[in-house]
Image (cartoon, rainbow, N blue to C red; front, side, top):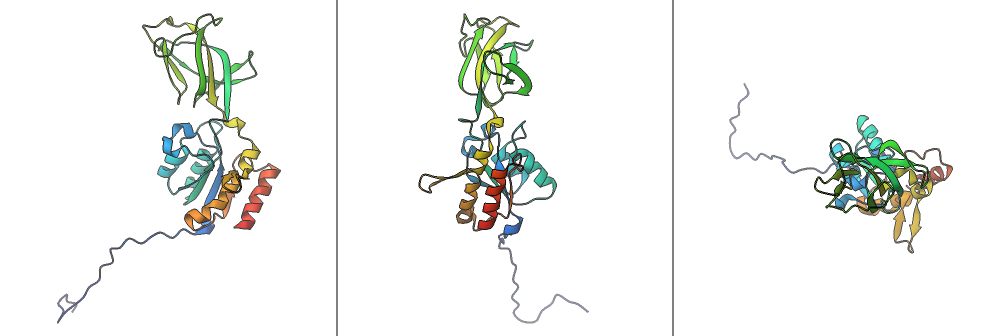
Length: 251
């Protein structure tokens, strides 16, 4: 018969101390690509720095949502679909560099007094809007009437959301309802990220790392080296493949 009664002094140990999860280097994936960092909190808008993500929550904080042309969010989504764990994210998209200027492109305010700006094709003065929304506006931003004889004033005549690329007409301003206008704006353009940015390198006497070279900084930060290296969108580029092979040899 089993009983809980014990004779004498009894010592019982309850192990409640949290145990760290050991990261297996062979399971760590490194992604070198582009992310819409203009949609992230300021402290997470990092370029050419390694960020460790371990869940979809981390993915959203460090890489942002899926947006046309940006490779990292789509790669992370595929990794999570296949139960991937630790991922080192290296974003090479720089809003200050990878941007396109749309010069005096014509739009018309809708019935909701808004305009959704679009990415453009062609060169000024013959640029044509395409269906993809323009987001992450930076730099120059002007709104004029057709013919550019009147330049409208921000806040007084219109407001705009730089993240979403939306202009809103101010009712009390000088822009008439449903009026066509010409807009000049710089927008985030991931198509300007080229293989050289992904390959990267080391500059500043060994103090500045970019692209694939950032992988060399991870061991000092984490104590491991990623074994799986992916560069979505650039897998067919010979220079990128040589860079990846060199990284694999170093790990």
